[in-house]
Length: 346
Image 1: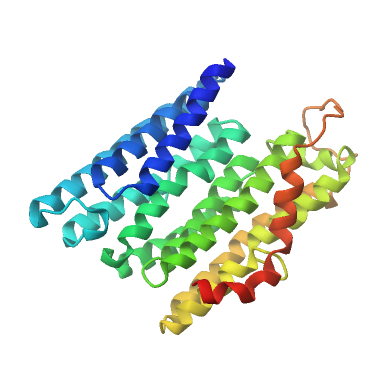
Image 2: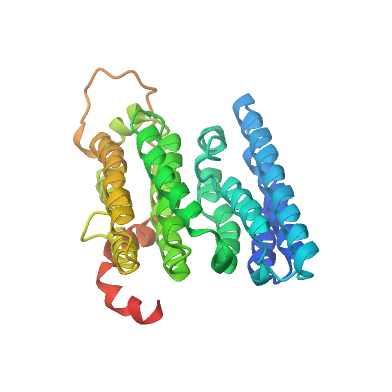
């Protein structure tokens, strides 16, 4: 792709996100979401592979439907209350439609079907954008409207997301699909707490984005698109693969790594809200995710060639690794000790 065109699309992504997260009016927020959708489409389909074109088409249709619902929800609310302010979403029907729209935007169950397919059709850097940057505007809208949303509906969707994200990821061999299902189960953790402590949702999202960025950039530097390629990458970059294993365990939420921090705070908050059964169920469902993270970690570090798996032989290129990987990986592993600083903020 032409570097100037790429720059224009990246700036548009930044602009769309900034407009949405800084707006108070529904129409401005909707405009930002539309700019985002239109800017990412050329990046998804830039390889001209039929699967990439299919992914871009699916993404466009889902996001267009979700944006329409956002506009419909805000218009219904304005019709009943005369308010276009995002925080003044008081009509129950509007908040129900908005929950549906943002669940479609994010890929929460039961509107998750598009996400693994779109991620599988994209390259790893674009997959990283779809998993992190593209989810930030809808999360901020959820954050701003959280007092008006239906907690029972959100908790139900969250538990279903954690369950399906875990179960459907178990049998996957493609790393992008595994990360897509991982994203769905993490969204479950964010949605369950949004009605009770929205700041915890944002904290969870930031740490999830940090760890996912580390995993995507590591996989991009080893060009590992499936498990069989991942098995042979140990001999090329042993240190990077060892770090990948630890980052995956952090994503799974194992102490003493960073990923344990949001899960710990969310379980604590749910218990305070007398929702111990929900906390127990979502904790048990995270074990499903732990299984496929361990499987990825096993393939990355413990399986050594020669073995009988059929795979494409990769050239051993001494290309320097992206320096961001080192920073992101370190933060993915070592932020747990800062947890005493967090409760005063939340």
